[in-house]
Length: 352
Ligand code: F0G
Image 1: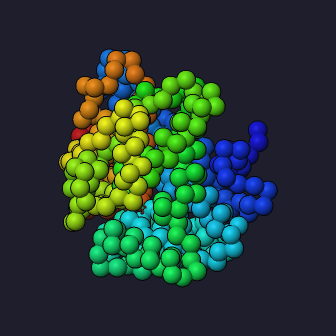
Image 2: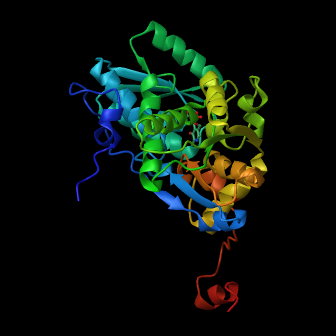
């Protein structure tokens, strides 16, 4: 079988690239669509749930799909540096792809609100990391101004190539299912990804690759739900730090997606995010980060509206290993520490 060479290679005719585009790739994409039997059984009525496990991309999140495009196009245009604001995953992806392309990566993060694995990645990949006192929204305002004034390319989802790359996830879903799902459940922060999926489904429908389009169901954490409430949130807060965003960059696009797809947005509590996060781990064997579990929390919250026999895809945007401390603090698993190192002790603890 032929080696997978990344999503630009696989989907180049759907993407704004040419022979002159230097493709900077880590072989991202082609992530598995994993059946979720426990979740399907919990919903009942013949509903079939699949998980798009995009945390299996090279840097552990869906951001790699956008970053291979954004960084390749930046390189093509002669850029020598990229910049982004990030709650963590974008910074990890920007760092990896920029360095692979021989460019500098400047990343602004909200000081104290980036999960440990993501910070580790940005540092190890060789980004120049600037932690600002203030939230993501503030950091995004700053990087937009810097990119306007100085010779550095913005690689947040305002960069149109980001969404072009990310739309390939919708292609992959259809390529596996043979059609679009009935519902697509997805977490929203800046709402770039929901916009990208919708673009992908629409392009495939137009080309006759799928017959139907999904209802796009976007979920935000209750403490950071500007798209649900229709107003900017000044002090966003949630345990799902990836989507701790009060002023989404793609607000208009997201509202259009909801309208055109007959979809819906809803807020999910941190408690329900953690329930879904644990359920996925314990019942499906799938470890995602808290923000990703918002898609499943949302599905469970809105499950009565899912038609019987429907096919549902929940997008798991990031790998659970990104945020080990949330897993350790909230797993609710039994941990037996400080044991005497002998067989009797172990057997006794195991109840034998
Ligand atoms: N899930 C994860 C794991 C994310 O990291 C993000 C966004 C989202 C969902 C939301 O996607 O913004 O396209 O609606 N993370 C950005 C970052 C903000 O900086 O890594 P969106």
